[in-house]
View (cartoon, rainbow, N blue to C red):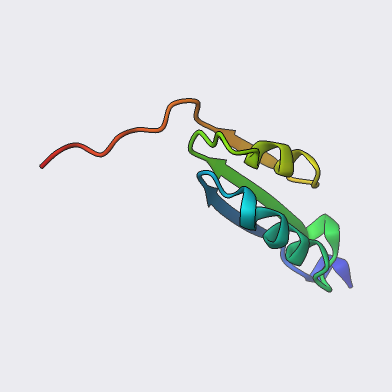
Length: 75
């Protein structure tokens, strides 16, 4: 039956999301969907609040981390 189910990709953009990211990742982990069919990608924009420590506690397939967040240009 697992072969009939598609792989799903969940992309979570973050910046200093330590207060909420753990709950988000926990909610994904408890889903009734085959774990081998879920890919979690966290795209972090340079968090400094422990967000990456939380990511490392979970089975995140891919972590994209930028050390220096880009500042919006003045218009």
